[in-house]
Image (cartoon, rainbow, N blue to C red):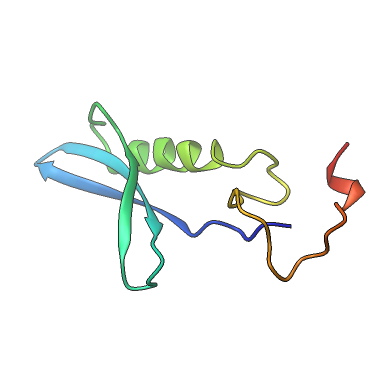
Length: 87
């Protein structure tokens, strides 16, 4: 099975009272992160931006039981698919 993607969600407030969610993904170097996606419009409350960002993050998971996975092959994984996740 491909490895789980390291994606974080945080809230940015570039102007007072304008909260934007931002998704960041870890790069090849664990100390470097790149912006994956961000809100187009602000929320009036921090919690609403966080909730919307969390929903966006969940959208990256094809299967909510195992989370968002990389598209590459798992070098340490079995060459045979795990049938329980194919149904």
